[in-house]
Image (cartoon, rainbow, N blue to C red):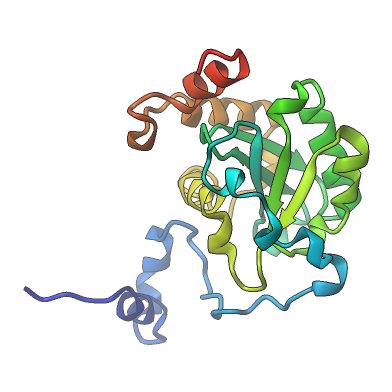
Length: 221
């Protein structure tokens, strides 16, 4: 049996001679250019050691407790401006929330998260895990605004928030990088999130994220 490693596939797709085939469009994130490995620079100054993911309680990492979320930013091609989408996934239920925003400034992003999550009871919004992007540097607003803790992945280790990373790959099927968010409303995003939240998952015993989320929210599981 012949096996081809993923690195070989990526090199072929982005090779100058074969780039014209446009095979990158079939990748989950459909990037026109390949992002170099470990391309994001660490930003330790904005994220104190007390907020490192290594300090996060084991109960969060093991998905034993409801109300812990992972967050990330979906960004789009530069010609379409600074509009972006925050994707947030509850770790235990895999329940997804999508929030549209006009800029990547941290303050407005945190304000939107607070407005979206404040209606939930405190046990349903205990903490958020992010990467070290500057868009999450205003994380203290989450604690001040609704009592939620924040944790941050190690530098160049987005896999440490793998739940939202995998969810983003699903989202890119509907929202590729060349999407102009001017034509996408918050209502559209809510409909998309509902669609994904109503899909049964093997990891949930073939229940849907919506079912597991509501069961935990109302204390029946």
